[in-house]
Amino acid sequence: MNSEETKYIFLDEVTSISEWWKAVKYMIDSGKFENCVVTVTGSSSLKIRRDVELFPGRTGKGKVIEALPLSFKEFVEIHGIKNYRLEYDRVIDLFKKYLEIGGFPLTINGFSSSHILNAIIGEIVRFGRSLEIAKETLASLISKMPSALSFRAIAQDTSGYSYKTVQEYLEFFKNLYVLDFAYLKQGSRVLYRKERKIFFRDPLLMNVFSAWSNTEYLYSALVENVVQEHIYRRFGEIYYYRNSYEIDCVAGDLKVEVKAGKPHRRYPRNVIVLSDEDIPGFLIELLS
Image 1 (cartoon, one colour):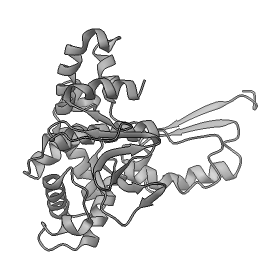
Image 2: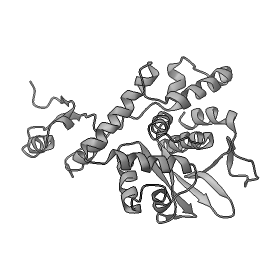
Image 3: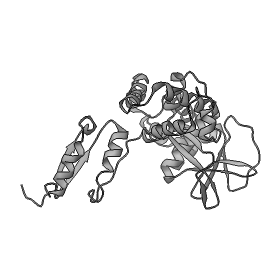
Image 4: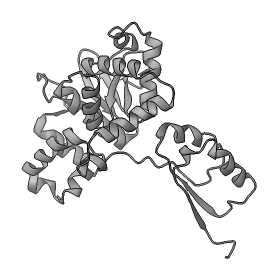
């Protein structure tokens, strides 16, 4: 084979092998992977994300690809809708379904959501975390969403766990792509020490952890989470604003208030206010 040819090497499920990265790192440093494209995959998102950080300066033109659940736009497309405006009644029905089963291919294809829950529980156990602390932390969080929260406020409704422990578990879930944080932004300043809005990265995750922790959530929290996640995917950042009034989602020049299930009030003209029927079209346009 011509040594100048690009070779493609695929390493699947590397996270099941202890210290797999050492062998790959050696091959890179010794030049044996010159002119090679190495694709590494793994089902443990936390482990592979951590291990990839052990390759500083060795990724060349490579990049990390995050295989996330389908966005609502993708969800609509796989159901055969090409022009959502022509079939908006059907789009609204699909949005109701999306809020229930999310964007995971497994549940879209009719399999039980228990497979998703069990996979995440497996990660909790694998990394030595307590299922009881995880359950209590999520129960407290879900009961308070979509309000901006401190770690202390979440810890208050647990069995005496410290806010530091709660913070550790929430950041663990963040690294598992279960949750993410929207920080308070005022002008150009991001106030990381203030309360943050915490959102689930797919509606199915909110549903399964609500059932697992035996905690009900507000409909307004569910739809706000979906909007936050889609804006986060579009801009790579998501904040909220609070002064004399609060704006749920701020990213770039975009300001969005999600009013589904909430009382209405007046907002400045540059704020997009989304009602129930506005949300599906907004999500599709956002990622188009």
